[in-house]
Image (tube, rainbow, N blue to C red; front, side):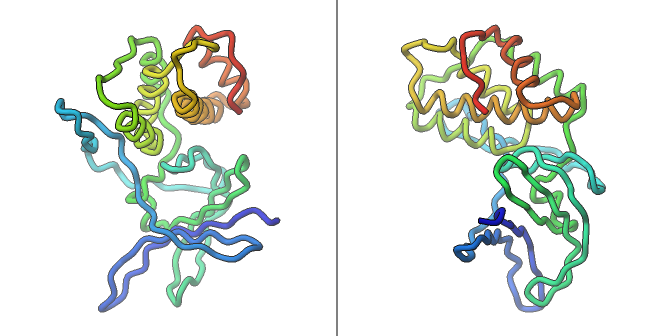
Length: 226
């Protein structure tokens, strides 16, 4: 089977409602679903998750070869930027490849910012995320199902600080009996996201970045979740 090709596009025309869609194609056909950016969740003190308000970021310019982060897919690499025709509209698209899941994402340049596409975090910001890993876990007294939703929203936010919060709050030494399977899955997903971005920043591979994170977390008896 060929790698899946994913198209994220927002088309606007007179009398038509702008809509963002993702079209995923493979040998078995095509599927279409809404694309939604997922900002990090916060809590209002009453147990209800809130979306983190963010100041508008400056539009970034992407070029072929850039490592970038797409909120729901993590770290990818810009393969090329080209003008293509989709549904009768000519769009300048950023082609982003994700090697691990054999996927290509095409994001319109005009919609890159609203879709949450960004360049790698600055070293200063990522160092803040790494420092957060050493902090004390902050586990809220709410049902696990609600906390799991908030953790997943943080992972899919694309914000390294939010992802680091998940790793910090769910870290456990391997084999600790009170960690559920779902907790372990979410922990590993967050750890993988951080490791992928750290590897790109350090210009190393993911196993080496993962080992660095596990050293910071003081976790030694665990298998790499990659």
